[in-house]
Image (cartoon, one colour):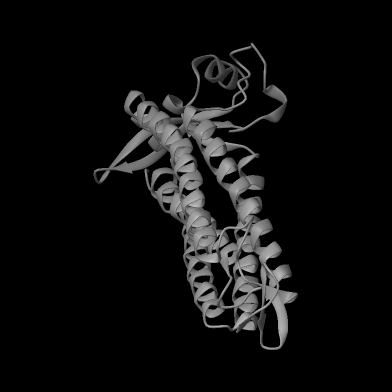
Length: 265
């Protein structure tokens, strides 16, 4: 690698960026970019910390309703998405190491695999959401009082048997749509948008996380485009690494969401 005009250098016979920016040397730009991304990730963690706190308060106030609602989620769906994201973090980390060693092609392949994993996560979530917008059976304690009276009058409630400490326990369960988009903003307590606080937090938390997945995929695809043009090399791979850091955040948040939402029951 040899020096060339300001801001550029020669690598393997082609002119590429040397990582400097606005007169600042490449190593300083690299360090400050990483620092800036870590600060941004800290604000993202604070956002989810607020949601986790809301979850803890709601769970403390009505734990039985949370257990009753969480039983409607599929642990298999959640576990599959967890495995997908864990594997995608591995491919991202491997891709970063590849570009550090000058293997731009391997980086693009690994980031491509990560993008496929991210899309698979969203598709999995789409099927899960489509199931959740239909009626599910919630125990009486998981349903708002006014909504319960309406469901009762519509003969949508009945007795069900469940095992509790090895004994059969009779529960009254009602068929209800956990999330009804048409009821958003309604002041009628018998028509809430969310059938329980658990599902309110479920859709809010997984929805925000899904948005982060989409942003992360956009960053990875942009990095792959730049990599295809041959812009990265061992002397400059800052966008690759900061994009990878963002994707690791997406994985980290899901590791907390999975047990809170899917294993609470």
